Amino acid sequence: MVVYLRVAIVTSKATSLTNVGRDIAYTLEHYGHAPRLMRFPPAGDTMTKLADAVIMIYPCSPLYITPYFLRYRDYKKYSNMKCLFYTTIEGEVTQHFIRDWMRDELEFIAVSKYVKEKLVNAGFKVIDVIPHGVVREDVENARKMVGTARKTLEEKFPDRILFGVIAFWHIRKGLDLLVKAVKKLSKKRKDFIVYLVTNTITRKYLEGGENLFIDTVFGKRSRAEILAWMGALDYLIVPSLAEGFCLPLLEANVMGTPVIHADYPPLNEISDSSRNLVFPYENIVFQRTGEGIDFELHYYNPDDLASTMHYAIDLKKKEPEEYEKMCSLNRRIFPQFSALKTYKKFLKYLVG
Image (cartoon, rainbow, N blue to C red; front, side, top):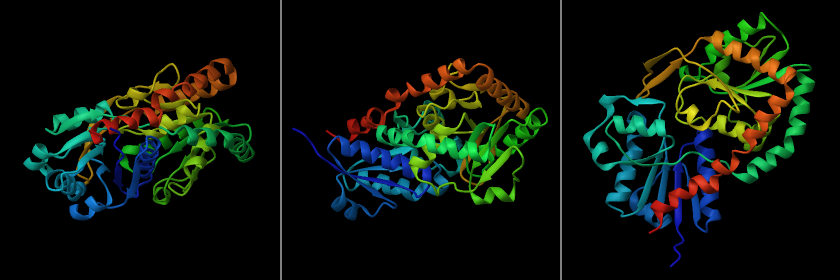
């Protein structure tokens, strides 16, 4: 007997979470179900009228997410609904925010092996790891726009190697180290630009320059525009010190763009040195910022990032065949991370 479900997908307005929710909805609809995107989980008696099952997508921070934990528990315990909690974390859960009922009654699906390890260490139950995926139509549509995006970038920054960064201002995003690396490399050469897509608050802390362009359009551009921009770059840089998955790394790779990043988990779960450029980190510091997470910050020497960028410029200019090989290898990873493959795993827990 074929079961068709009305599935509520509940997440916040954060750009990354919204994109994930939409991609999961696309997958469920492809397989014949009826997804419904929601910003807030209503009470159980209301939810049962709207949906047969629920997927909640939030980071695992009890400080902020406890109301959603309670809704999840109530859906399963009192409304008898199939309910999944898809989560991420960029470090360890701050222990004094954890309650016994959370360990006893919550079950999570982690977005990476790294996230699973951190949650299990905190005493939580993790039933599966489902990595993020990307939608073929999104990639194909964006590829049609790459030529125009590239032309625009080349007109604005002629005769430059184009590095891109997409990150909001936060200590874990490593933007301060990025600026140090840019300044270091700028003393050696001027034939590059780092195009930073970020939020407006970043301008309070960083200033642009000859080799750093700051564009405060984070969260204001369509998915297709951002993917096309990634595809038009020579390289994407991920300067982050901590991630739970790093969707931009995956998105850039499927668009054929090599990524420069520090070699730590979970980035090295989805990356490969044969198609990306990696550099080492030096030490780990756990940092509390009042968000209910002890962020696991992988600090690196900005000189190592600058050196990797220097090598990347020469690679593109002097070894174009090797560079194109990296791009080709990246485009080939799409089948592994197709949303229809990765997010289909949710149905194993919702159907039956």
